[in-house]
Amino acid sequence: MPVGGITAVPGPSGRARNGKAAELVLRNAHIHTQDPSRPAATAIALRGGRITALGDDGDVARLVGPATRVVDALGRRVVPGLNDSHLHVIRGGLNYVLELRWDGVPSLRQALAMLREQAGRTPRGQWIRVVGGWTAEQFAERRMPTAAELTAAAPDTPVFVLHLYQSAVLNRAAVRAAGFTRHFLRELNRFGLTSAVDAAGGFQSFPENYATVTELARAGELSVRIGYHLFPQTAGQELADLARWTETVRPGDGDAWLRLNGAGENLTWAAADFENFSEPRPELGSYEGEFEKAVRLLMENGWGFRLHATYDETIGRDLAVFEKLAADGLFPAGNRWLFDHAETVSAGNLERIVALGGGISVQNRMSFQGTAFAQRYGSAAAALAPPVADMLRHDLPVAAGTDATRVSSYNPWVALHWLVTGRTVGGAALRPAGQLVSREQALELYTLGGARVTGEEEHKGVLGEDRFADFAVLSHDYFAVAADDIPHIESLLTVAGGRIVYAAGEYEGLDEALPPVGPGWSPVAHFGGYQATPPPSASGARQADLLAEAVAASEQHRRWRAARGFAPEEPPAVFDPCFGL
Image (cartoon, rainbow, N blue to C red):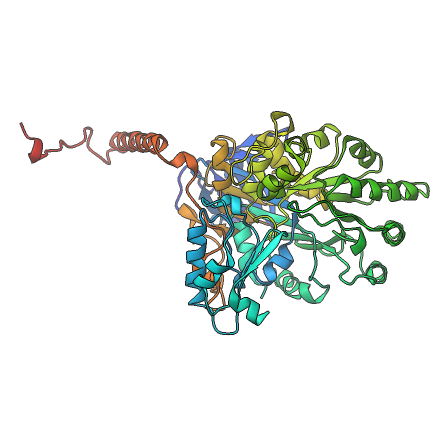
């Protein structure tokens, strides 16, 4: 991309002055570093997958050599690469190209039209799968499709539509019937994600379901750094699985792109309180005996873990087990452990988590399920589901994520919007001002927070010299746009490990080429992934404002060209015969 304002500075032998020219330089940017000692910069230089210089154009000019790629950020906001601390990236990627995604679709009418079109493209014997990342609240109609509508849209093709973890709708053909690639990772890069902590999940067996992501890592083709957890899949066999893993591998094994992070988000199936806010809280039976054995095994072998725990009642029971093990010196013991979700955690249990050295990973499940939660438990409970601000006041390590792809969408900006505004995707305001966090805090939870979960806070989450070269050039300034525009932000240029892994808009073509999405009938190949819609501010009066800004910018550019002799001093007179005098 041709740019001005910065040129190569040759030194001995024609190289940059320090003998190590940057491979990539980004200039003319508004960089939010998250480093208190240097909170802002306008230019950044990269080499060997790490940041070699950060400052202004003059600071990086000495590192520009003849082979350096220089990219003009055009004054855009740059943030550290986002890090989803709870994303089912491996499970989500296994069938991504076979799924019809309704993420971001604004109306049920459009969703059914997509379904009808996809039915004509799906070969006999294949299903149409709509399996998460949407809620009825996002539709203008504010309702789910009916079985009859699914049948009308796809009379002969089996259709399975999963709504959160609450319910599924099948068409008549489905009742009769009763490839992980880099494409899902590129879709995550589209939103500025450069790291994710994989929370494992049901129907995700190790090692067979990890084979493709391992092959991509071995070939150096991952574009998202993944720290993964292992989740025992077979009830009654959990302890045997955990024992085998602790004897084979250790947390931290791997490299900067693919590494084992620990166990969970379940250790024993009996201890999981799966959420369905349209139904009463599940009453768990006695699980403490096997659960205690699992936790002891992990802690004695230096393994950290994460636990799916939606309700305070479950969290309290788990903490009682940890406190019992603390008598043996196993808590706190330096192993990273955390609760996931924690929508109804109490102040008392927050204090117990602090004392035991734990943390919490929060997700924006309430963006999609908040209305159902409020209807069942009341607005007062919904205002604290989960109490993120209280967690931060307790100085707890807190990380943010989505829990995509079955419940929430993988779009991190929807999650950031929820942290900042407390609103659902349908616009319902659930959280009071005291439970909201600032934009700066929310971004830190989505960057440094995730790095702390994997013990990599010295390498990522902050832009600084010798840290990972992971960042995103945003389509709109996250710190300046209207709050309701936040979910519409995307990355125009995503850099991971110094590589341009996603490029759009003015930067299209700078990223690495991908093979076509396959199979040919793939819903993703035809419709794409997340369905982007214009931000609310891009309508009405705001459009007029933007047009006026464009006109002013055009006149400013004309004057700049005139000052340099590239255009006449005065614009040519325009003669309109219809209005001639």
